[in-house]
Image 1 (cartoon, one colour):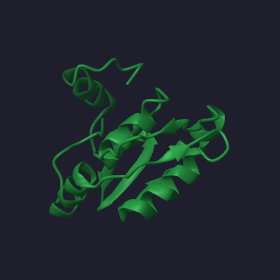
Image 2 (spheres, helix red, strand yellow):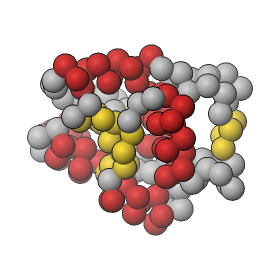
Image 3 (cartoon, helix red, strand yellow):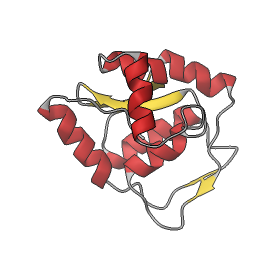
Image 4 (spheres, helix red, strand yellow):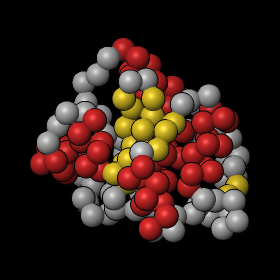
Length: 133
């Protein structure tokens, strides 16, 4: 789930786009499913600017994150991003300054100006396990 807080109209427009735009029928394997490449590909396919923080890229490498998925039907960018960040308990995504940002959960909270405790409270309200989200 994205980390969401009250925001400006540009962020709301990007969130709406993320909820609606479809990624198409994609296939990623061990060979082409490195997260950094998947993010670049998603940005090109959808026209939504997606960036990763240095900390997220560190998690990609440390956890050796690769997607191994074949979509037989399209899904929204939001659902695809949620699937990606669920592969690591340390990743989250949010929208800030009109851009989708993939970072670690602490960064997502800082970008939104909320405390880590408030972040975990929001996660709990969504009914998610903090360690498995």
